[in-house]
Length: 366
Image 1 (cartoon, rainbow, N blue to C red):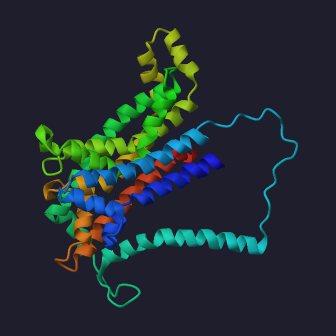
Image 2: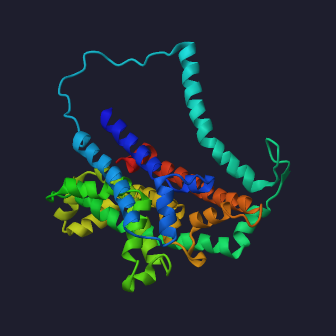
C-alpha cells in the first residue's frame, strides 16, 4: 500500500500547500501562495517573487520525484499460490458504529460547504438564523442576465473548450506511445506527462507571467488578451487526466485487433483510427468531459492570468464577487455562480462514472 499512500499523501500536501483560492476568499493573508498571488496580481514581479516561486516548485516537484524513485516500480508478481483464502472480518456492533461515524464525519465535512453555497445562492434574508428566513431565485437569474457574469461563463466555455480539444489530441498521442510503442525513454515521457499533477497551477501561472512580462508576448499576457496563455495553462494542468483515461482504454483493447487490421492491408494509423479508437471512445469521452469541467472551474491560473474584467473566467468572477464590499448581495451572487459550477462538475462526474464505471479511478492515477 505504500506507493498509493505516498502518492495520495503527496498530492494532498502539494495541493494544500499551494492552494490560493480558499485563503483568498476567507481573507487569510499570511500564506506563501497568497503573498505570491498578491505580488503577481500587482505586477510587482522581481527576484523576491521568483525566489518564492522556486521554493514552492522545488518542494512540490521534489516530493513527486522522490515518490517516483522510491515507489515508481511495480512490485514483482508473486508466483506462489495462496494457501489460505482471505475472509472479510465482521466488525461487530461497536466496530460498525465506529466505521459509520468516521466516514459519516468525513461526508458531513465535505458536503457542508456545498450546502452553504446552495443556501446562500437561494436566500433572500439570512441573518442571525440557522437557515435563511426568506428565499429567492433572483441571484440565480442575475448570474445569467448580468453582463459581467454572463461574459465570464462564455469566456470559460471558450477557454475550457479549446484546451480540452488540445488535451484530447495530445493525450491520445502520448497514451498510444506509452501503451503501444517501444520508444526509448518511455518512463521519462510518462513522468513528464504526469508532472503537472505535482506542479501547482499558481507556479505555472507565475511562469507565464514571467514569459509575457515584456516584448511582443506582452500582448497575450495578463494585462492584454490572455486567451492563448489561459488555454495553454488549462491544457497543461489537465493533460494527465486525458493520458491516464485513454491509457486505461488502450490497456483493455488487445493489440491483436490492430495487427489483424494491418494484415488485411490497413496502415498503422488507419488500423488505430478505424479499430482501436472506436473501442476506446468511451474512455476518451469520459476523460474529455472531466478535463472540460475542471477547465471551466480552474482557479489558480484564472486568478493570476486574467486581470482585465472582459477576460475573466468563472473562477475569477466568483472571487471578485465574493470579496467585493460594494453590495451585500454580491456574496449571494458569487454563491449563485458557484452553484452553477457545482452542478456542472457534478453532472460531468456522474456522466464520466456512468461511461467508465470502475475504470474512472485510473484517470486520477499519478
